Image 1 (cartoon, rainbow, N blue to C red):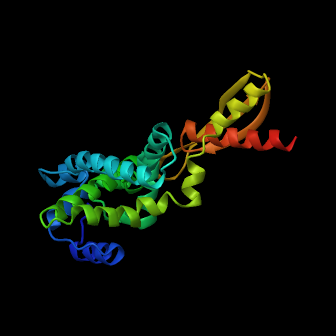
Image 2 (spheres, helix red, strand yellow):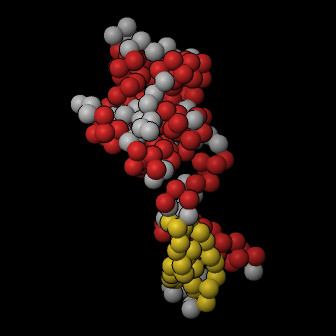
Length: 241
């Protein structure tokens, strides 16, 4: 069966977890509705318009957050910090941590393919929920205060944790700088294998080679993630020498 929201359960979860009162359920119904569900149930709305607004809201509020909390950091570093905080992988991680993914309304096919754990969908819904909260509190003048409360409890808490800090480390750049300092240039990343795993994802195994020799190996659900893990493994080996 197609997944449907139990409004009372969602309201209990949302208000209890975040201490944010829901005034108009329609914003949240829309924010949680994927186009696959809308198509199957002949609805004339999805979360996409709210996602557009939520993206802009996140850009604004996270820009303010990093600007105010990093007075000695230049604009280039601030831009990178903001980009990492609002990227798909980060927002998906927040959604999983707070358990909001179980309330997304998906069509049968999307549910069967693990849609409630797909990073792209999770990130979109975090943005759409952020927009719903803003609009739901705009009329009474509390939107600014409530959005800050929401982000403090969710995104800002998440990016303060070691799980996130590890995920944004750029081991490939670090390895590139190291081998350049040693006047070495023969660095290669090679996909050793790939195979399906749960939720219809693909796991990649990547080797990193220096001067034709394998110096590290990494696994990830994308080539980029596997390359980062391979670079990390290579750095650890080089530094033990």
